Amino acid sequence: MKYDKNNIFARILRKELPAQVVYEDEYALAFHDIAPRAPIHILVIPKGAYVSFFDFSEKASSAEIMGFTKAIHNVIASLDLKNKGFWTLSSHGEEGGQVVFHYHVHIFSGRRPSQITPLHS
Ligand code: 5GP
Image 1: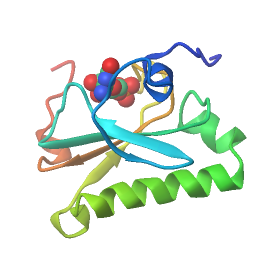
Image 2 (image 1 turned 135 degrees about the vertical axis):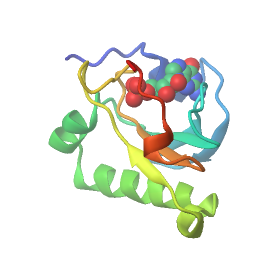
Image 3 (image 1 turned 180 degrees about the vertical axis):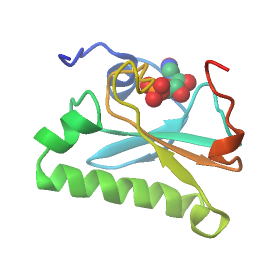
Image 4 (image 1 turned 90 degrees about the vertical axis):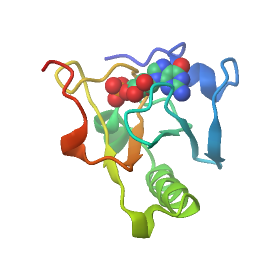
């Protein structure tokens, strides 16, 4: 899939749309999910134009991959989730349930994966 530079997260990156930002650095932006599925539900997105994890891991530079991974680490540390516990999720494509086609990692805490209601139950 070709990257659409007008997807919602690209527009949040350009500050055309508002978001509740919790972290930003050279490589990444992190903000609260608009429809949280857990008491803590954060989205971390790279600043580069990548559709999904597959696209990112294929095309991003080593600096971008390292910077993005460290940014996720910094978000987790800043929210003090290391001891509390958390889980991460990244969707790709229709079968993966991807809705926004700018690569993003979900960080959830306060609710276990098994407690998240399946979309098609
Ligand atoms: P996906 O299903 O693509 O992995 O997840 C996309 C996520 O983006 C969903 O959890 C959805 O609630 C969230 N989302 C969609 N639109 C917006 C928005 O405009 N602002 C924020 N903060 N989150 C959004």
